[in-house]
Every structure is written in structure tokens, then in C-alpha cells.
Length: 130
Image (cartoon, rainbow, N blue to C red; front, top):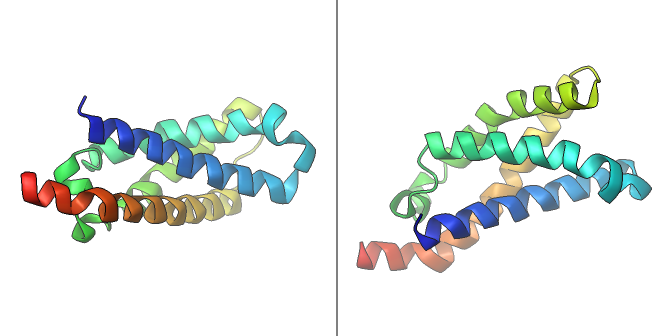
């Protein structure tokens, strides 16, 4: 796997982790790391990676272009419902559509920000060097 793809996987993990931590911070300050973090982070990250791979968001020539950032919210929209359902199943709780909507929007925003930094840092390099 090329280094830019690995960097994107790490970047996506950090973005989703930050969104998850912020969300948990609003609800359960004492349970952030121990109880709820893995139940939210893991399903959303794993399903996002599948959606992003399907949308070719780990290919440097696509990920490094401003014009291709539309794929990020589309990927988040594709990933959010299965991830929320997997989380609900794992926790043994009902699926809450409002949670899925808010989490999907937050993840889309967080990933757009992190992917924009990637385009700024790496995009011109891939256009120049192929």
C-alpha cells in the first residue's frame, strides 16, 4: 500500500476519533475512553474505510484534488446508517436516527476539514509528479 494511502487511513482515523471524542464529551465526560469510545469509533471508522475505498478516496490522484472532495460527504452519507446500526447492535440498544444524522454530519465535516489539509499538503505534489 503506498504511503499516501496509509497517511489517509491514519488521517481519517484521527478525524473520526476527534469527532467521536467531541461527541462523547458533550454527553458522558467520565465514560469517554473506557465505555463508549470503542463502541462508536470502531464501527464508524471501519464502515467509513469501506465506503471511502469504494469511492476511491485512498487513491492519491483522487484524494489530492479539490474537485474530488465531494466524495467525502457522499462516503459519510453511505457509511453512517450501517455504522450506526452496527453500533446499536454492538451496544444492544435501538438505532436512533437523530444520532445517525448528527454523527454523519459531524463526521462528514471532520473528514472534509482533514481531507482539505491533505489536499493543501499533498495535492500539488501528486499533480506535478503523477
